[in-house]
Amino acid sequence: WEGNGVNYEIPKEGFVVSKAGVLDFLGGTLERLGLNKKERADFIEFWHPRMQEAPYYFVTFVNQEVFDSLAPLTVSPRPDKVIRVFMDYQPLDHPVDVKPMEIVTPQRTGFTVVEWGGALH
Image (cartoon, rainbow, N blue to C red; front, side):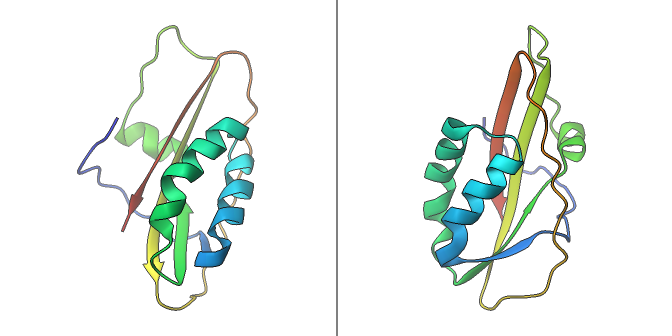
């Protein structure tokens, strides 16, 4: 699905990634966020080309609980696990110092629903 106007506070913690490092960063980080190989490939196929304009990017991920409150998801039958990855990124001319965000890898169990998306700011 696509949406407009979801208003959320952009996390201050995240990562600064060079244009040349985007591919490796996404692959490793998406794995830590619980995406399998195919899900990572689909995410990267969509987002990597959009992250090749600026020399650097500030990349963060919206907390799943925050995202759930902004865009509730109802699935039937009810899944055993829901993994929602929402990336927020900003182009940068120069690297900046940011506190790295903590990533907790979800455990996939049973019927798992995965949703991914993102926003450029």
